[in-house]
Image 1 (cartoon, rainbow, N blue to C red):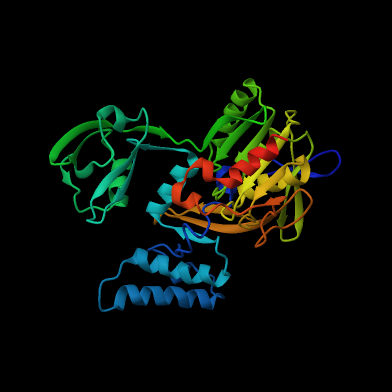
Image 2: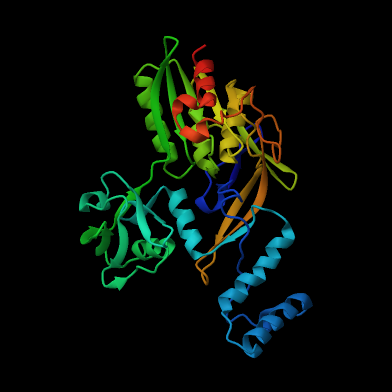
Length: 403
């Protein structure tokens, strides 16, 4: 939805969730899968008679389904059909997410999911084991521990299941109370757990004292639906502690919802400032701040080559309009916006590019990224230790914020 102000400048309203997916899980994570073309009952008499190419396509679909010498999965045919359609577009961000990936995708971007509060993985023997137990979760209260190996869920033997299958089984269970049997060392234990809504944290924050200054630090992992409220609460907490400046770390942040990053930026800019611009086939829409809230203390933004989309919107605005210093390496360079469409037959989701986004000054950073004011490569020692003391990019940002 759009509206115009008295100066005839277009102002973008709050986006609907399905319309504002921006820059979400870059192709390093998901890649091009396949999509949805026709329903099982779709037949040629529903087609425009003039569209011979599409009629030929449906005829081929029906021929394979009816005459192929082996049984075929019609969903596989549907997915494979759209695969070719999407590949012709040669757009890495136009993708099909199958039902399982769509579920995980929505959970992460929503910021919550129905579950027991654990992360799982598979070991070298294909056992699914607990990697993380979230604090104050059903799993933690029931006594589930890191290293526990899943054996049974209620009466179902899951010892041969994959981690994705076990996760889906728990999340989609109609039984909100379940018994989970695990192997812990040489002991077999059965624990009773209740499914609950698990909130996912997408930020961490703290105060760093350096050069006699109090510097707020907020690390943003993802721009999920609940990230704005978490960010706003963190900023309020830091300001109550008397910070002089702020570091926002969006390294390895692959993006998220466009309206989330818009709301976060609105905490800093002045009313009627341009946040970013949208280019839809040459029609430019400027997106303005409509809030009265703003800040004026020093801000430093940390980026790296995995900071994409929404992260780049934040970094480019803070650099071009707020006057923030960007530290690190060039960001990923994703300058497009995607829209999603849920597919009822397969349970999946189609995600396709609908717009370009431009910086406040009208620059398109696609394939170029946001260029830091202070370029600094991450110390290779950090990859060995993962200790904060070896994170030279972090310390450079803290040093700049303390000046």
